[in-house]
Image 1 (cartoon, rainbow, N blue to C red):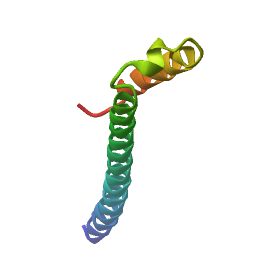
Image 2: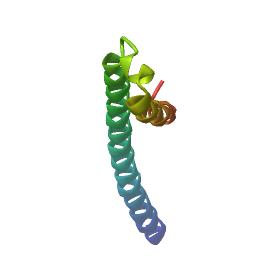
Image 3: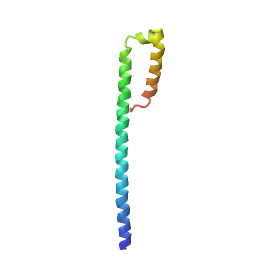
Image 4: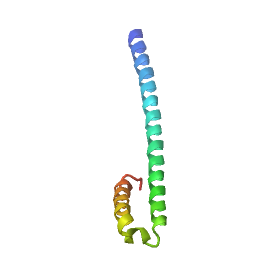
Length: 82
């Protein structure tokens, strides 16, 4: 009976530390994802501010590059938190 109690105590203590470690890692990843989402939203806002008048898209030389940047931004927008 005493050995069973010791084994259960060790298992419960070990499980506690494992779960605590996993929760801490999960919280760090949540913070990272949140910061990435904020950065993507800030880039999207800035990109829209840059071309409010549509002058970049209308320009032949810069327009191609700007459209490609917009495509990249649209792909990144899929990874934001909603």
